[in-house]
Amino acid sequence: MTEGKRVLVELTVVGKDQKGVVARFTSAIFKRDGNIESISQNVSRGLFGMHLEASFTRDLDQTSLRKEFQLLGRSFAMDVGVHYQEQKRNLNLAIMVTKEPQCLEGILDAVKEGRLRASVVLIVGSDRTLQGVAEKHEIPFHVANNIDQAKREARILGLLQRYNVDAIALARYMRILSPNFVWRYPNKIINIHPSLLPAFAGASAYEQAYERGAKIIGCTSHFVTMDLDEGPIIWQEALQVEPNEELSSVKKRGQTLEAKALVKALELFAERKLEVRWGRVFIK
Image (cartoon, rainbow, N blue to C red; front, side, top):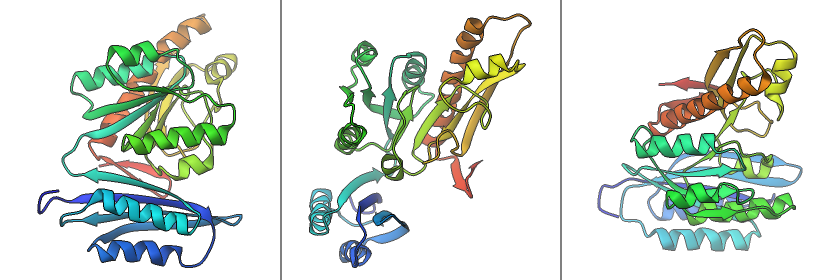
């Protein structure tokens, strides 16, 4: 790292609650002349979680620091995640998908056209349906399909660490993420939901809205929290339902809007224009 270059290190520590954890990790940061930018802690049912951000402005041996954090984690029998964000580097984006291609393709098109200033470093699929899209764009594709949620998410978390991912786009990823997963990436997981939230949550939003006779149908991009489909709203798009329009037509038009709303949210995130305060998103 060159002199004067600022690196932000994000650290997550999760495990059984015990004394001395915060002190040991913060001491390791201060020893290397790091400055703590933010820190949050949570204890729930005996499980401790800490998310910490620290900045360094002098030469930093990232490999050495990562090893030190991991050794500390092992000494406490805790799981440690380390992520580096350097200034002036494009956002490292991971995309999680299942079968529907429209949002994935929308993101990749936006990156190619320069509208979304990000590098898609990884695509994770719950099956291999969209592997061909990843191969076409020469992006690493990995499948995480273990029936056991803990094992499946452990694999994904390992991949996110390996590719130094800054943010995650859920491009119609049809799996529920556990609180343990979400907690490690606060306000960095962006989802698209086919409904104008907070109405019509869940997987069958189009069907619910159609059956209720909704005249305006749309979609919502939002940050993912531990509460399903209740995260802070980033962007929404809407369409007018035509008289006697079939559900299949509404879905098709809605899918186009889904890609648009998700890409817009990612563009704002990549440009650092989003700020979350008191559960609400503010656009700078």
